[in-house]
Image (tube, rainbow, N blue to C red):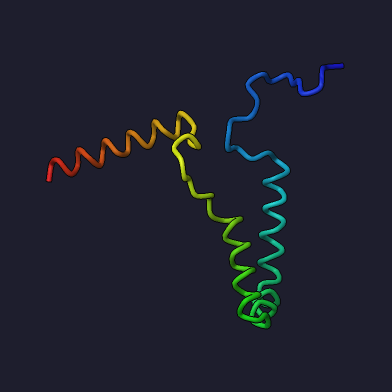
Length: 96
């Protein structure tokens, strides 16, 4: 029996790639929402304004990525992408 936390794949799943069950759950949730959208809209409209704002805030936290307040929160590859983007934008401005 392998040690706890040991897998036959030493590289593991790449960062940001959801596992199969996450994808299945998202699909089920999307299907549920599509089938019940009218009821959900009606329920939402019946809420008090403050409650609607609270619901929207909770949904936005699930949909939008968290704000980055410090570059130390970025991975090396994210930093590399950011640097390349900034270089391209700088070069484009220099041409104008």
